[in-house]
Length: 308
Image (cartoon, rainbow, N blue to C red; front, side, top):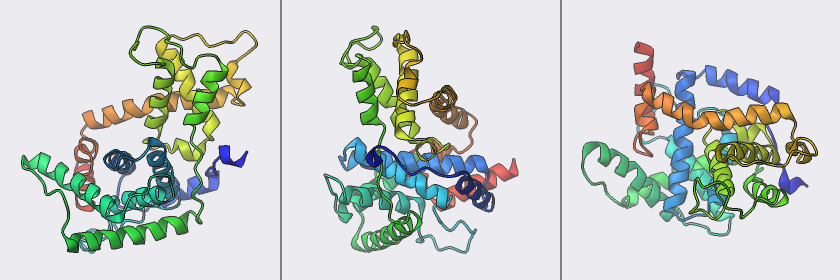
């Protein structure tokens, strides 16, 4: 059953992560925004690279595990001492995508990865400036980017002890729907265009959980996430899951306390992001994909928050 489970973070690892994060020159709320923005950037890159969602999700999970070992992804955030061309958050995201893609069914070349991340960076900056960006890096930019990605890949593998296995909850969720005889059913008329609104909504919750600063994919097993996503989706759509023989989630080895925590955590991701953006916590990180995720802009946000 090892292929259905993941290594989860221990209480000691989470405490060590919290202590290391406290030593960084960024407030906790900004660190959460950095993690959220990095995961969104990874998802955007996976879409442009035409990777399967399973591949991109694996990259997100590896980044979450790396964050536990090194909050801030070992990016040098010392003010003024690091050169602008040093390793940045984009390089860490690109390293995870490059690593997972080349071991998956659809590998992507280093040049393709560099082109996509260059486009995301320039498109975000150009969108703010109202001008068009350059679609591809020149040879010098590509060489520097690829070197940084290889360095980040080495750091990531070292921090994870080369443990890159990731079991995703998405297939389990589909299996549970089938076991409950809900797979393929039209369900309530909330989204009749979808072949299975309940399955579609469940997958939405699981994909959103990848962005959670609570690191849900690192602290809980895939079957627990699948049950919680299915529970939330059923409540959203008004579907009545069977409970005549007792709580249905216990059949899938999930207790009530775990389900309650995950159900709330899954719902809180979108509301947290919306509230953070409304409060102007980190508008350049939460409002754009790629263009605002640089060390200089992150430190600028930190200085702004400290001055308020």
